[in-house]
Image (cartoon, rainbow over all chains, first blue to last red; front, side, top):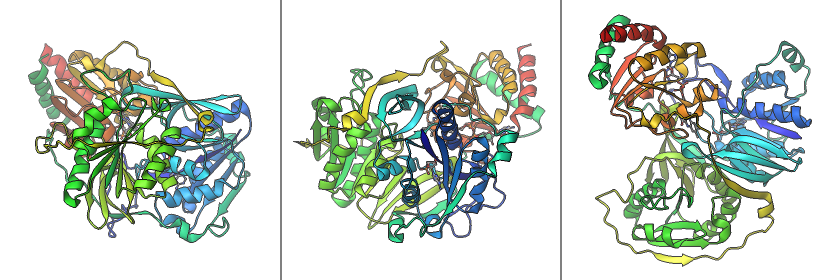
Length: 260
Length: 335
Ligand SMILES: Cc1cc2nc3c(=O)[nH]c(=O)nc-3n(C[C@H](O)[C@H](O)[C@H](O)COP(=O)(O)OP(=O)(O)OC[C@H]3O[C@@H](n4cnc5c(N)ncnc54)[C@H](O)[C@@H]3O)c2cc1C
Ligand SMILES: Nc1ncnc2c1ncn2[C@@H]1O[C@H](COP(=O)(O)O)[C@@H](O)[C@H]1O
């Protein structure tokens, strides 16, 4: 089973303030820590588990600047066999379509049984690239997958997550693309040996010319006009003071609302 | 023209009181009419089903035209079957905007469909302005930033966030009696599609017997709780105040609590008298499951956490420092 896994590097903004930069079209990147997109870790783990079960190869691929080498190397250390970085100004100044098209051009030049992506990137929240890439590759896809079971090397039985705890169960023939939802497995940490081996694994860097891509094809279809911070409809009434004062007020509030 | 895909409940899910048409479709109808009134565009609903009539009956008052595709293979949603059919219809009609719900179905279908049609797609939008260009608003960075995004060309496709618009059935300002023209569309399908993709059924996540939707008091934890070993402290506190422990999705993903404790769009929707959110950022998918709670108290160390826009009372601080103190105060109060 030969598997491609698409990895995106994203800033971790869950606990930090996010500010818009002077262009008004991007956020201030200084002091942000970058990591592998949350769902992509689960996609990679899904691929590594399938490789352990059925053999084959896992190739990780990312569109970005040189900085994404960090997450690609981490994936190699966890057990991926090969990494590809797609770097070109043409790729970086586009939108979801641009990235999907670049991934399509790179992946379609290879033999594969399965392509995995995350179900959503935590920065843009688009949920687009996976099924877009599948359409370009002309293979079936399933989004928000929470279980993958391979049958006879030719089909996959997958669970897709719907609303409110409901699942859609379907069978899809391979090659196929699945976008993986968080929680499907427990992503591993790299081992010391894995980290040592990573540096000797194949690592390709490709641009649009090397991929023979017509630059016109990469033109973005959408564009961010402006970013802004939501007006804080600070509905909350803030309780302040020392931890002790806060706790006293909270305890009284709880008592008032629900009794004790 | 504005086209929208009507999303329906599967037949087992639909109760007589609810009907087949999902809320998101009625919400998109409101949006479609907002745009339609400004531009004098007709609103066209697309219905794919094994039995269109009951669905048509629910929406015909709100559409200028309904295009029905009826076949046994359309009994259950399936992207691999819906996509080629919708591709045929949309490439013929060329609606200025095609709307699909940003739902479990829509997120599976829309990017694939937009790509085969060559249409720009903007997902998960909560606000739409159509002038000479299409401008939409959507959240980024877990709700900490709003983006205004334009489509560089028209026609275009959007997926619409649930709960962003009032249902057209509930809107007193819309008094429509359009009695849509209903057109049945034939279609052709490459038969190999049925070998490539088969719908097997719906399933449900197993439960452990706890029903958080029945709780009067919920103490919910998020990633801010940091480590599994901090959960007993919170659970004890929850017990002291007669509350039930619930959580955000990452806590489930980490395996720290069973799935039936999850609040949010892919978990449970709750409406307790009191909801205490501890170390929860307030992502849309979480908020949509708890925002109607009577009283919401949130503790978060980030003053800009989106949870504070739905909470009634907020504490900016370290939950791990405050909770032991609070637990003692509660014990004191109880005497
Ligand atoms: C299709 C889909 C469905 C989803 N369904 C759901 C769902 O049903 N329910 C759900 O919850 N999520 C759901 N999610 C995930 C959702 O998008 C968020 O990722 C999730 O809700 C975030 O959980 P969190 O608030 O615990 O974590 P984070 O967003 O990481 O937030 C942690 C918060 O804790 C605060 N914090 C950290 N340390 C401390 C401390 N010591 N004291 C106080 N505060 C602290 C931080 O400031 C931060 O605000 C879904 C996502 C997708 C894509
Ligand atoms: N720049 C990128 N390089 C590689 N994969 C990406 C990139 N951007 C997005 N993806 C993949 O597409 C998924 C969904 O991203 P999005 O459509 O942006 O929400 C991610 O989880 C990744 O697996």
